Length: 260
Image (tube, rainbow, N blue to C red):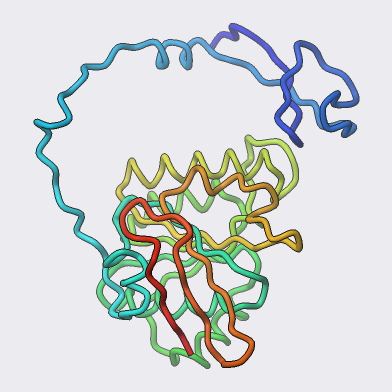
C-alpha cells in the first residue's frame, strides 16, 4: 500500500509532530518519537459511504447471555456475559482477580468452550492453583503467552465462547511501539481486541491492575474502549471480596456481588 502522509507520534503521550526529533515537546520524554503513516487503503475505507437506517424500525435481537451459574457474578454482569463484549476485571494486585476468574472460567467450561491466557504465570503455576481450588479435572483450555498477536490468532482458531486474558498490562502487539503496559500498547491492544470481539462474537475478559495512584492501567486508557469495567475490592473487617460495575453497557451499575 502506498504511503499518503507521514507523521511522527510520541509513544508516551501520543503527541503528533510533523518531523522527527529526539525529545517530545509535550511530555519531554526522550527517544519516544516514532514514524506513523496513513495508507491509501485506510483513507478509502474511511471515505466509503454507508446506508443510514431508521433506528425505530430496526428489529432488535435479545442478547443470549452466557450465564456462569454463580448468582453474584451473573447479577453484577447484568444477567450474564454478553457474546462479543470486551470486559475488564480490575482491582488491587493480589485481591483475587485471577482466582475468581479461574473459578468462573472453569465453571463455564463445563458447558462452553473457554480459553484462558496468562501473560504473567506459567502453566505449572496456574495448574497448581487450579488443583487447589477446582480440582484436577477441567476442560478449560490454557496458554501461557504475552504476545497479543499469537493470543488473537489462537482465539480465532479455537472459536471459544469466552476468552480470558490475565493480564492485559503484560501483553504486547508486534506492530505497536512502546514497552508492555505503555499508553500506546494499551490503546492499540484495546482497539484490536474490541474489533476481534465484535467480528467473532466472542466474549473477552481482561484483567488490569490498579496503580498506586488509584488509576486503571496507568492513565484510564482502556475504560473508554471497552463495554464494561468491573472492580473487585476487599473488606478489611471480613474475608469478603466485593464485585461491582464501574461501567456496563449491558446492565445496571448499582449491583454488588459478594464472595467469601
